Each structure stands twice: as C-alpha cells, then as structure tokens.
Length: 200
Image (cartoon, rainbow, N blue to C red):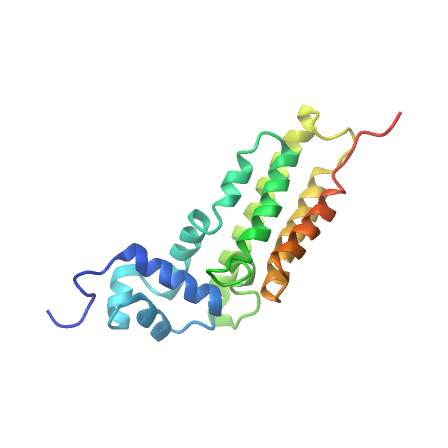
C-alpha cells in the first residue's frame, strides 16, 4: 500500500510534534505541510485520516498540552488551601512558560489571539478554555470564602480575574524574553494582594 503513515508510526510522538509546531507558530501560522513534516506523515490525507482536519487536530493537541506541559494546573487545584492553589498555579506557570526544552509562553494564551475569520473556531476554542480556567479558579475562591479561608468581604470574582490576568501575563512576558527568575518575582509580588484579616 503506497503512501500513508509509516509502519512504525507512533501517534503519541506525532501529537507531541504537532503540539510543538502549533505552540511555536500559533494556529494560523501553522500549515498542514508543517504538521505532516514534523509528525512524520507522508501527506495531508494521511494526516486527516489519523487525526481529523487541522481544527480537530488542534483540539487534540490542546488536550495533550493540558495533560503534559500544563499538568501543573490540575496539580495546583489539588492543593489543600485556596492560597496554595493560586501560589502553585502561578509559580507553575512561571516554570512552564520558560522551559529550556520547549517553546516559551503558553499555547492556550497565544495560540490564536489574533486571526482571520478562517481561524475563528480555534480562537473561540482557546477563549472557552481560558474562560473555563478562570471559572474553576473563581469557584475555588468562592468555596474559600464560604469556608472562612478568605476574610469576610473578600471578592472571589475579582480575585479570580486578577490572578487570571497575572497568569496570562506571565505567558506573554515569557514569550517576550522574561527570565524564569523575573516571573517568579512577579508572582511573589502578585501574591501580596491576597486578602488578610484586618488587624484589631
């Protein structure tokens, strides 16, 4: 049988290669030929047969990103206190967006911020995922308010928006060349706004 995928094709390795291409080049900056070359697939029809079209492949690699380079997010949400969740989330982002062995920044933040109408589905997918992340953090902070982890009068929604903005800003700064140490310093400064019980 001519063409198609090589007999030794490893779909996990291929998805990792596709992830790196999308991460470096963004959704719209990535051509099908870039993907077939990086993934070790002979032609576009073989790519479509294995993973669906470009949009479907992009969704698959976003899931893979969440399970791999961004697994620190789910690990952070397993922390026992809301403050520890935010601390782990932001410091994890500082590390993940400055990995020496991969692209800088965050594919979920930078993957399709600006795009043509043809790429709107990818942009909308990323927007939904970012919104889901903020909603999850907001819910955790609401729980913290109900349990007394946050002082009375705290604003869980405002805190979630603030820390999400810091989180996304870390990715932008990393892509622009900020060092890991600089980003950790930003996180330390951001954590100083954590609500404290008023002094008597």
